[in-house]
Image (tube, rainbow, N blue to C red; front, side):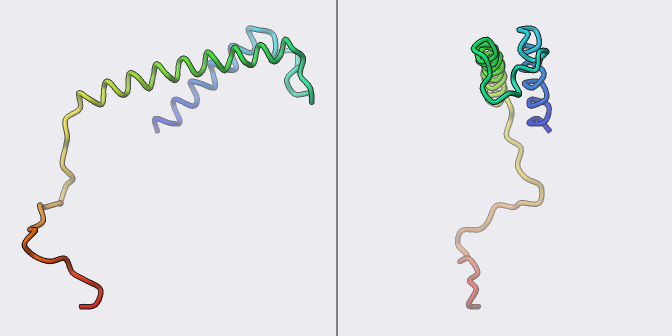
Length: 89
């Protein structure tokens, strides 16, 4: 779910930046060899999207350090004195 939301956010940033640069509105990007202005607009839009993604990843990493560990339900500590069951038994 988080990947879907972040992909939508980054796609919105990318498309907004392309349209504001004028590259997305003229239909310049869909041709085989885009103009230099379209390439510069695409590079700038991708740069902005990656900067935002880097900031989001940094925030998520810092937040993960403050989360407490919660054990899984129904999982008991295994007694290590008993050997594990094998397929031959």
